[in-house]
Length: 267
Image (tube, rainbow, N blue to C red):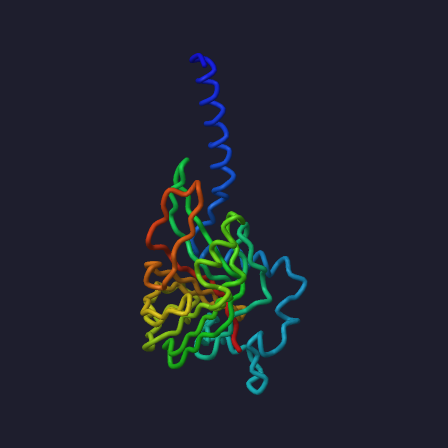
């Protein structure tokens, strides 16, 4: 084979690998962000045929005996003071999770991969999230987030089966985060400000439980909804998770980011 055909062959091979890389990597979604989630919730509510007036008293946070919205009250200055205390339920009705909009409540992970043709970020997320957060006397006193691992989808669908096998979804179908000690909440939360806290608790994945500290951003809205985003770094081996492999995958980082986005409403 002369040099001309050799160069043509290598060029064609390069085009094939480049096309495969572009197809394989998918569009990498941004990390969870409470401000972006708030903007998306506005879009979801505007597009929904169900307005807050049609939501039942319980999910809208209406205290029938008091005759007022328990999510907020007005003060003498006309400003709104949000009532923080109570049980906040993870909402599964407003916004359906998908990668394009990052709408609704979801939880998942992101990890760096090195392929034979370059680096990508693999992301897996599940919209099957349930649970609640309890606030008392301005402190976060209880949190339980339960994630259906069989609902994990990826920014590349070809990863999905391998991801579910890696996290043992068939035998351990849920992952959970449970708060440990109560956490004092910044006063700005009651003023509708974005606040950040560190929440220490236990994370269970693949039937293995380890301590975990999540960095959490929270925002309470005056329409009765709250938005909570959080993330932490884990080492996969600590949870008996072996990252999946494929011929094109050179390596996968030993650690990754676990993240969640929760839309909550008063229960």
